[in-house]
Structure formats: C-alpha cells, structure tokens
Image (tube, rainbow, N blue to C red):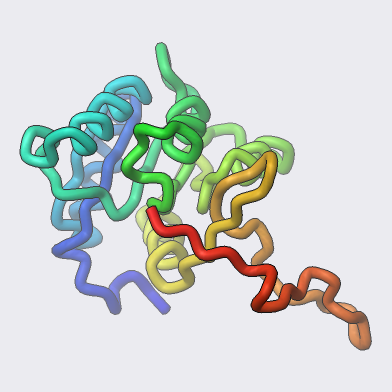
Length: 184
C-alpha cells in the first residue's frame, strides 16, 4: 500500500537531525507527504527532553504523543542510537512502542543489523528520496509489527518473512500460553 492512500494530516512525527539542511529537507518531505505535525530537534538530547516533557506535561511538549520518531544516527552530542536506546529501554520513555525510523549515511549490513537489534523499526539510507521516505512510513503504518520483550531485547519483532524452504517446520511458532501481552 502506498503512503498516498493514507490521510496523514493527523500523524505527528518527532524528527531529530543535527544537520540543518537535512533537517529542513526531511521536514519539507514529511510535510509534502501530508504529515500534520512535525516537531524538529537538533539532536538526540533535545528529542529526549521533548519526550520527557511529553511524559510530564503534553501541552508543554506541543503534542499529545508522537506516532513516529525519525532520527539521524550520527549526531552530536547525543546520537540517534542513544536516542533509540533511551526510547526503547528507559523507564521514563513515553514512547517505547512508537515506530522508530533510523536515518543513516552508513547503511551497510552491519549497521542496519545494529539498528534493528537496538529496536529500530525501519532504516532509511542517505541519500534518500521522498519515495523511499514514503515507503518507510507506509511500512510502519500499513505493516505494524508486534513488540518482543526478551532478556536482552525490546523492540519490534525482527522477523519479517516466512521461511522460504518448502517442507521446513517453523521453529519460531509459539503457543497462546507462551504469549505475554504488555500494556504500557
């Protein structure tokens, strides 16, 4: 499903990007896609402060809650990975279940796996286009993933596809007795 098929006027996004030009570019792309509210931050630390304010007083934060977080990986002084870690693991985080799109100029396999293993929902590689940004947004809207909480991981289910081997039994199938529903 394409992002154009959605009414995004009520969607709110928290955008953290330290580079002014990329921040403005992402802001304009998101607005062109029809996103209603885009709150920008200059780095991960400012984004954490906005989220903390949201937890304490939503009116001061300027939003009721954010539907998606978009953050650059490499920022100073607080990078996107530290922001992601705080969002997924910190007890004060009001956004543990919010889809997180990590933007990076280093989208090699190891970096994508690292972002995924920290709890990123999607990874957007630079240079990006409005189309690829729209595709990542469509993924988090149209195909939301269940969250998994284990001893060393909390985040969206990292498995995306069914095994392609014919006749192979899915070992990852769980029973209803093994499911624990966590309400935030």
